[in-house]
Amino acid sequence: PVIVATQMLHSMIHNPRPTRAEITDIANAIYYRTDAVMLSGETAYGKYPVEAVRTMTKTAYEAEKTKLAENDIRVPYVQYDDREVTEFLAKQAVKATMRMNVKAIVTDSHTGRTARVLAAFRGKSTVYAIATSERLARELALSYGVWAEYQQGKGDGNTKESRRAYFVEAIKRLLERGLIERKDRVAYLGGSFGEVGGTTYLEIIEAWRILEAKERYNLPDYTQ
Image 1 (cartoon, rainbow, N blue to C red):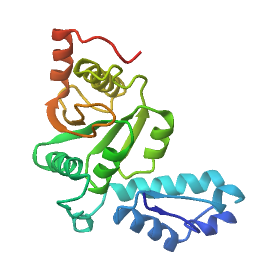
Image 2 (spheres, rainbow, N blue to C red):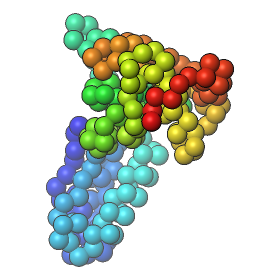
Image 3 (cartoon, rainbow, N blue to C red):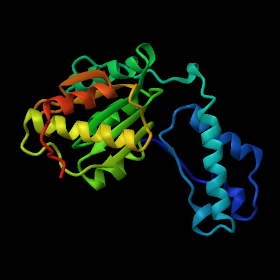
């Protein structure tokens, strides 16, 4: 991840309001698709730490709403890279968010590699990375456009049914939190061979169909 830091809101160490140049620096970092912006002295020993965080958050939020397409980063596709399949499928998933009205990309993440590749393409839809460890969820929080959360279980047993149940549980949690709606179309990047197999397929489907299929086939609960 690329983190833009150091003196982002330096004047707020001693003053409750930032300078125009500081606000511009934060906005430009967002416009050029950095993974994260960070405060240091402003919150470590500054007089207005809460105000500094609030200012950076508000600026980043407003900049996110006005990003320009000409600043999109085109990541080259390397044909013989050892991540060839993952990169190809990730690229198609990001394209689907623009061409097929896909509202979200979901991936279960053992190592974080697929989520980071998705982040590299700087898509417009959120990537929901369902991490199999709390540490991985924290690490992925720095990646561009990635909303990472730990979920118990990891498709235990390495069977088709257990991996599917893990994905279905993730969709249910996203729906319960209002992050997606039942009618939304989602793209799912998964693997057929567990942690060691990497990403092997891309599925695009409406959320309600996923839940309907679960009820029809009554998949076992491997997420406990």
